[in-house]
Picture 1 (spheres, rainbow, N blue to C red):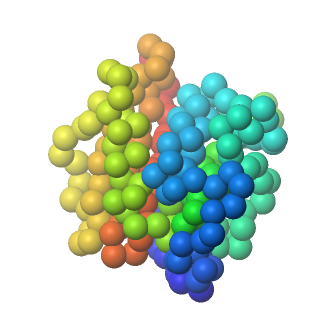
Picture 2: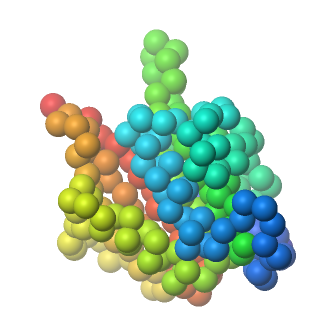
Length: 192
C-alpha cells in the first residue's frame, strides 16, 4: 500500500496500482481515461448529468459507477462537499475516479454541486496535459491568475466558468509530481 494526502484527505492506494497493468477490456491510457472522468465531474457540478446511480451517460463515457468508495478513497465518502458517489475511469495504470458530491437541503432534496477528479499512482505528466487541454478548449473556462501560494512540491491552477448567468463553477487543479497524484475539485456558486 502507498498512502497519499490530498486536500487534507488521506488516500492509500494498492501497490499494484503503481505498476502498469495489462490492458483489459475498456481500459485506456491514463491520459485517455482522465478526459471522460473530468467531463463527468463538470457535468455533475453544473447539474447536467449527476454521478448518482448507474446511468446511460456514465456507461457511454466508459465510466463504471460505484455507490461506495473503494478502501483507499474511504475518507472522501462524507466531506464538507457532501455525500459522495463514485465513477471509475478504467485505466491501464493507477486509479482515476470522478467523485460526485450531493448535499441535502432543508426540504430534504438532494442537490449536486461539487465534484472531485482524483488520479492516484499515475505520473502527473500523463494526466496533466489532458486536464489543461480540457480546460483550454473552446472559450468556456478561464485560467485565473495569482491566488494563494501552494505548499512546496505542489503546483496549482484555478479555472472558472459561468455556464449560466446565475452559476459560477470554480475548478482547483492540484498536481503533486513527487506523489504521482493529481486532483481537480470543482465547486459551484450561485450568483444574484
